[in-house]
Length: 151
Image (cartoon, rainbow, N blue to C red; front, side, top):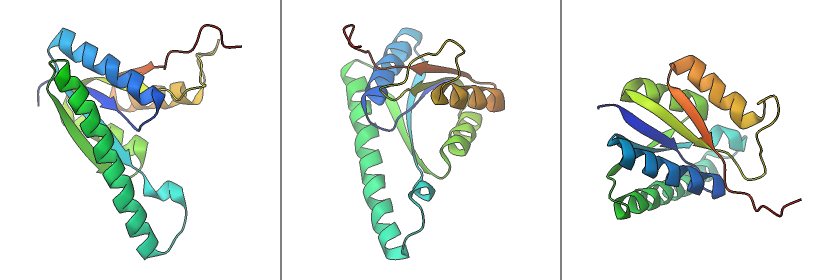
C-alpha cells in the first residue's frame, strides 16, 4: 500500500468530524484513505460465551455500518476509501495497522466535551502522543465543532 491517511473511527460527533477532515485531506493530497474501526470486546468485562458472541456480532455489524457510511460519504466527495475492521486492544490494533499500512498520518476524533487544555494533556491527546511515539506516524486529533454560545 502506498502512503495512506488512516482515520480511526468509532461513531459519534467526534468521528463524523474526523471523517470529514480525513476526506478533505485525502482529496487534497491524493493519498489513499483508510477508515479503521477496532472492536474491543475486552472492555465489556466478563460475560457468558454465548452472550459475548452475540455482542461481538452486533458490534461488528455496527462497525461495518459506521465505516461503510464513512466510505460512502468519501465516495460522494470523489474520494475512494478502504475500510478495515480489527478486533483487539484499540491502541495495539491501531499501532499494528499503522506499521503494516505505510501510513503517513493518523487522524483521531475526540469525543464531544473534550477540549484542548493549556498543557495539552487530556485523554485523547495522551492517547495520540503514545501512538505517535510508538509508530513514528504523525497523529492529529480532530475535535467536533462546539457551539460558540456554549458556557
